[in-house]
Amino acid sequence: MKILLISPPEGFPKKLQWVPLGLGYLGGVLKRRGYDVKLCDMCTYSWQDVKSEITKEDPDIVGISCLTLFRNQSIKVAQVAKECNPNIKILMGGPHATFFPEHIFQLAPVDVVVLGEGEITIIELVDALENNRDLSNIKGIAFQLNGRIVKTQPRQLVKDLDSIPFPLYDDFDLRKYKPPITDIPKQYRDLTTTLIITSRGCPFQCQFCSTSRFWGRFWRARSATNVVDELEWLYSKYDVRLLYFFDDIFTLNKRRAIEICKELLKRKLDIVWLTETRVDCVDREMLEWMKKAGCYQIIYGVESGSPKILKTINKGFTVDHIKRAFKLTHDAGISTIALLMVGNPGEDKTTIKETMKLMNEIKPHRTFDSIDYPGVYIGEAALTWIFPNTPLYKLAESKGIISDNYWLTDKTVPHYTGDHTLKELMFLKLRLDFGTRSKMEFVRSMVRHINARTLFSMMSDESKSTE
Image (cartoon, rainbow, N blue to C red):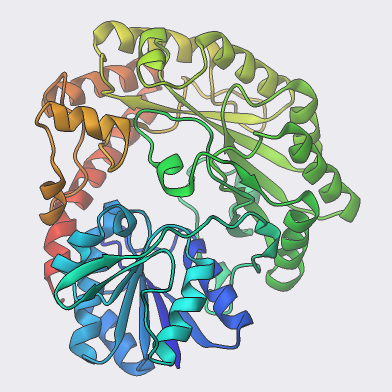
């Protein structure tokens, strides 16, 4: 039985940025069980390319990842696959498919939706399809039977993440991937790069975030030895020298983070890396070890400099936590980026001013040669999106901004407009950008935003085209 796992086209820009690790993990478990599996990152594909690839591979099963932002493309891939061969079994998984399996069956010729974490489920599912067995005994799936949708019992989360094999990289040329991080130091930009995920789940419940709703609130982590084993494998087999630790909270367990750093140093792996974490999950000792082990940058999800907004969105930390974390990180010689949001409930000119004041005080961006930018660079301040299965989504529902039926359309993810119109939100974002950036970076930010808006407007049209 031949299996083709697909990450769908993303429209614009047409360039490879990050390896689709979700598919990599599924491919890894399938290969370990002896299945004939191929992974295809179709990020840059035209729809004709998609059709040609599926026709050429002639798989028995097609698995498609489905994120909310790219759900229309995932649906289109399923349609194209069935057009290529009506007998192909179509599987779909990922956050959006998990939250709205009924919609998936309504919009796309999908045979089975994998709900939540998929490594164990995919093995049982493929085995059942290969042997034409009853699907109702497989936990963590949804399928159609006699015109109705059947949801089976939930699948328990994998407790021992070390038991999952490393992602399958056989079908990815890492040299072609260029991460969308604009401030990578010049000396690192030509290094072979990829992602690594060392933990799953999040114990926090930020109002806007669906992470804990998909992965669970119980934080599960791989052992330090297992993590560095993967790093050494990537280092020796694929010549990886630049890594992005893509955990939601890499440093939640400070002792484990230090153990990873010590093991990296022990094995003398000449790599540089960056990561994301929370401002209340770092301390001086850990940051010093991270610097020694090659960490050059930490991305903090700050969201706002307003105490009122931080409380409203349930971040669980204060402005003092933010100030302390950035000072400690800079003292350790590590560059920082503060991710910000504009338009959370309660946002107004006053809260934007508070955020501007904080950014200009902590100066989140420090360049790598110790020469500061002529202005504060804060990363990309994004307008707040409404993602499914979040507290913000429920609030937006109560205000009549969105309903579940919205996802039956081909519209992109909407912004939260409970307090302001989209035009007013744009002015608040411009105010923040202008007050925290150099003139040059402000212009660049404007161009990036215009390009992003163009992308979103193009996406639904592209999902309908056949190019």
